[in-house]
Length: 156
Image (cartoon, rainbow, N blue to C red; front, side, top):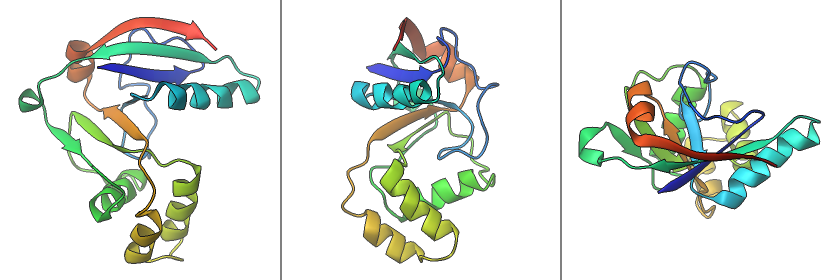
């Protein structure tokens, strides 16, 4: 499957060392299968007067060989996992997490939940009709090295 990653630099050899903490699915290398989503994310760098690069990859893995968490929708499991990761309390050892990205509308709802304004049920109720834009977070260097092959990096 073809995946994309936007950054301020071309990323030919991704690693987990340069990953930021407290993201949706924890520390890892984030990608999407949605080309337009990756381009839109890259355009955010351009608006900030930075370089923007779109790197593409071929990703192949056997799910039986890896520890994978797939979150199908914005549900309680997704919300609790994102909350733990964003708080720095994730103690899982998944190689790969697949699930909905917290886009601008979802982020605003999540912020209300994290601030205590919304309960978990109310948050899920507001997100129920949102169609997730899927993201892939490869959290182990071993999976990056064995399953992800760089195709090209193009400046936006």
